Length: 348
Length: 224
Image: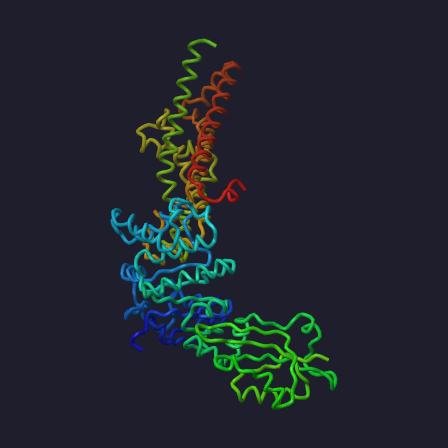
């Protein structure tokens, strides 16, 4: 794919252990990050996403394989060459990593000073960046005087200072509250649109992927288990890890009073099966539960449910209970109509 | 107290100030960079040089574990080579500097190691050279701690300077021993002690004030 901004080509990263076997942090990763898109890499902690992100600006070196950024192999770059490449890749961090000894303006000026930009050009560029991230009144304040959201705005302005082609985000919203997270994500989305900047972010939060990522890669145990356009991946998730993250997208969970009584197998003839139904796209608006009752004679009891959007597409999740004698029949019917079902347990 | 004694006290105070100021200056010039290097040269760090780091650490520890009065006498040939003489106030600056430099180096090292590793990573991601990381990130961020460390070092040097009477270094400590103790003049001893207390107090307050000026972290992070 020629329009890839970043291309991981057979990247493996081993961490040698003293007297033992090597730990495989990344295992033969092949991934293209499209130009101008917002790509999310989602995985649990220890899945290898942090190592993967740091390969892009050479903070980590692979044991084998290549990482191509703007047609050049980062893994072969050294010294001044590598530093020049790093200036074309901005990075923001979970804990912001701002200098406590510098003001907002001073922090944003740092990468420009490092790049050797003349003083006379730094001030106007910094002023422009402060406007861009909406921190006009805070230029002379110190990080300790700012809220988390403001700090991350400084981090974003700083990362954009040298006009990079790519922005890397290392769990940039994980330390922020939901409201602030949304504002920071909106800012990233604006920047992506206005500057045409490619953004590669790592996260363990499904909501981040849902809200801004056009593309997603699911990483598990150092391997990419699923990747593609966000909607495509989540409308037909194939890997269990993807499915489990998907449950997180709607935040729909079995209510406590039911969860407490749930068993792995039915205990009586009157038992009810607790079923999770996930539906996407056009199906989200179909009256499937009514049809299940009418066409199969299976009555369901709704325990929890929500409909969300992934990009422009509706995405829903329902938790229902129905007679334990007939879940297979119900699942077959729903499956025929493009819905994903999973038996969570039995009550009674 | 006679005018003579007051003149003697004044001269001794100036000698002490001279010795402490010069040895603080040279001690910082040697110990500061050494401390930065010690803090950044372990395996995998910015200036990774584990062997040199270990060797310099050993030298610093050796210098710090030698009692000061022994150090003064032991390095007399070196002092003569540097200062041209081994006796007198200027000559005393040599052992004071040798004692101060490793002490300052360890204090600077500790302050630099306190700087969050995330800042180094951020600077590397910006394409900073190791030298730029030291100048623009590590030293400015460690400054409050470095200033407090230097304050501690200067106060220690005021104490050490009282011992250099052994090699004709003069100063307040020497005055206290020769007049206050050997000639049984308690008023001289009292005056010497009061002046030393005032000096230490001034240095400490000044150091804390400067450190606070550098410290832009949240108040809750201060003074804990």
